[in-house]
Image 1 (cartoon, rainbow, N blue to C red):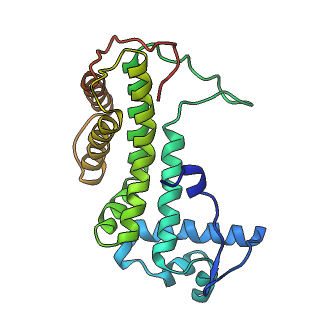
Image 2: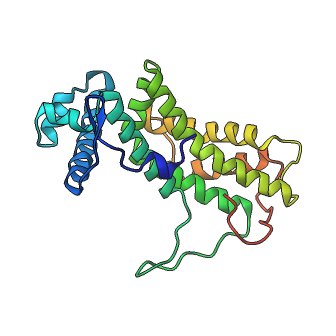
Length: 236
C-alpha cells in the first residue's frame, strides 16, 4: 500500500496529459484547492460537489483547477490522504521537543497503551466525521475512491499488525492468532464504532467507550487488563 509519508506528499499538477514542476506559488495554490475541496465535499457530499464551487472557494477560476488536478476524484484523493495523515499523526504517542511539554511516561500495561491509541483515534474520528461519511458513501460508487478508502484503513491495520506480532514474540499475546487477521478484526471494531457514533449519531460517552473497546481489544488477544508491556515501551 502507499505509505502515509508518500501519500500525503504534494504531487505534480496536471495540465492535459503533461506534468510540470510545482513552484512554491503553485504549491500554495494547490494547497488552497485541497482545503477548498474538503469544505465543499463535507458540505455537499462527493456526488453533488462541483469543481466550479471548489475553484470559486479557493479564489481562482474554473479553468485554473485543471492546472493542478485532472478530475474531481483526484482532488478528493488528496483530501482523503491528508485526512489519513492527520489521523495517523493524531494517534501517534506525543513526543517532547522544543517548547513542547514533556512526553508522558509510557504505560506499563498493554491495556493502557491500547486506551491511549483508541482514545486518540476516536477523538480524531470525531473531528473528521463529516469527511469520513463522504468517503464511506463515495467509495461504494467509485473504484478509485474505494481504493483510497482501503488505503486509509490499511495504514492503521499495518501498525496494529506489527504491534500484535511484537506482543506475540514477547510471549504475552495468544500465539495461535494471525496478527494480520486479528489487527483487521479489532481495527474494524473500533473503526465501525466510530462510524456508528459520529456519523450515524450514536449515543455514547467517551471514557466508557474507550474502556469497553480497549478491554475487548486486549482480551481478544488472550491478555488481561493487567498484562504488562515487556520493556515499558508502547508497542503500537
